Length: 71
Image (cartoon, rainbow, N blue to C red):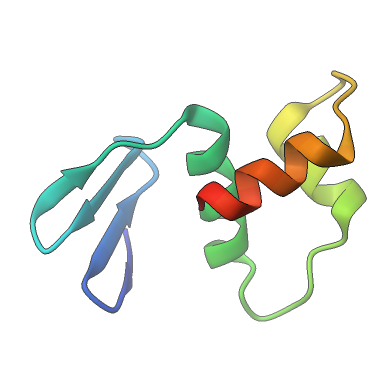
């Protein structure tokens, strides 16, 4: 579990909670948030984020940008 402010991110349950209540997130937004929190000690390159969150699928920069804004 990762705790930040009033939020708790549970990667095993794929759940984000804020003040005890569940926060509804798209799967890719959850994955992106989990990576950014887990790797908060460093800058994660865009290519690495794309590989982790989307795997081998082609995605546009707009897709990444929209997920970052949602997160």
